[in-house]
Image 1 (tube, one colour):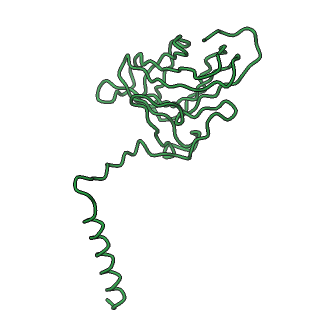
Image 2 (tube, rainbow, N blue to C red; image 1 turned 60 degrees about the horizontal axis):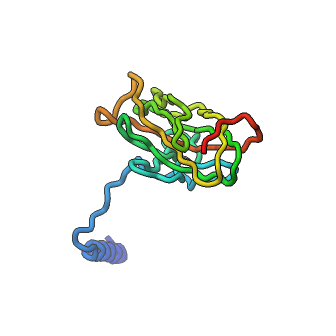
Image 3 (cartoon, rainbow, N blue to C red; image 1 turned 45 degrees about the vertical axis):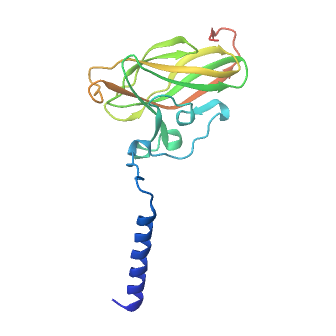
Length: 196
């Protein structure tokens, strides 16, 4: 080695040692969770589109980066939830003004995903949404219908009802749900279901 390389090498080791010695006792780095990897920053609320990863998260809900599965997920990520039969993934989204809205879901399907009922503002609006597929993919859009909603936060829940026989449970009893985004569009119709 030449003298310059020796000096750079020595300084590098001194700095590394100083950093190691300056970390307070008991502080440890958390293990990296690949399932929580974030994608692009989500844009929500514009044109009635609410990204799953920007919705209110409760319980086991978290953000999962989806770029390694392809580029079809909005914002390169989705809201991921894990639970047992009978549990519910609960969230909320805002409605800017009282009116009639068409509600659609863009979900993820996968081998370890379950079968869910969908509840809007404490009323079941869909009895069965099966999110199983042999590969991780975006589902076809789930059209839930048109509803009259008041201005303010709307409660949305997915109740885990079970799973298809082909689905692989996590830990023998847990299934997942992936929500990419919730687009809702105001419609001018008099024939809609009330959901207040």
